Length: 238
Image 1: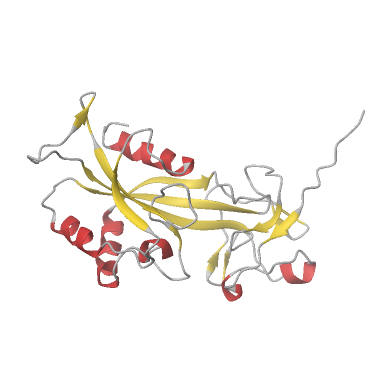
Image 2: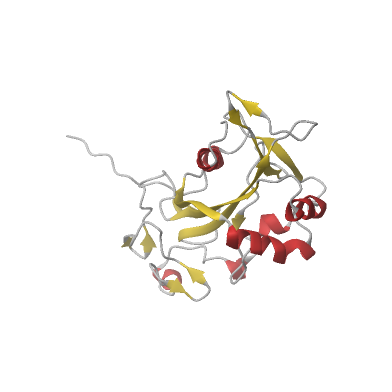
C-alpha cells in the first residue's frame, strides 16, 4: 500500500514592515523566541478555539491542512487577530420609509474596495498593537472621528468570534476575527450623519460606499457569512 507524504512548500512573504511581523525562516533559532498559546509581548497568540498544537517550533492550523506551510502573507505564525465592524443602516426610499423585499426590511452596509482587489470588503482587518481600530478602517475614516467610532464599537453587538476561511491561511498561520455589528436604526441619528461626513479614502484608488444587503452582494465569501449573521440578527432581507 502506497502512502503519500504530505510535504507542502514553505512560504513566508518578505514584508517591508519587518519590525511588526514574525521572522521569515523556519529555523529553531528564529522560532524559539515565539511564545505560542499566550500573550507574547504585544501579540496575542491565543486562539478563540482553545490551545493549538505546536510541532517542530511551528503552530498547526486547528482547522487542518491548507497545502502551504510557513507564515505566508500574514504577519504572525499562529492566529492573526482581526476586527470586522459591520456598519449598517436601514435602506430608505425618497420619503424616508424603510424599503422592504419579501416583507422583510432591507439593510445598507458600509463596504470598501481596495486597489488590486476584485471584491468589496467590510472595513476591518488587523490592528496595530494597542490600537482599537483596524488600519483599513483608519484609511477611510478621518482622524477626528476615530474616538467616536471607538465608542460606537464599544456599544456594538458581537456577532461572530473565531476562525476566518481566508485564502491567505496556511498550515502554520491563520486569521481569526471578532465581528461587531454597529447599526443605525434612525436616519436622523447624529452619529450616522457624522460618520457620513467623515468618510474619506486617503488613497484615491480606494472606494467606500453604502451597499444594499442581499445574497448577491459582491463581498468576500467570509465577509458575506458575517453579513448574513447581521441580517438574521435584525430579521432583515438577505
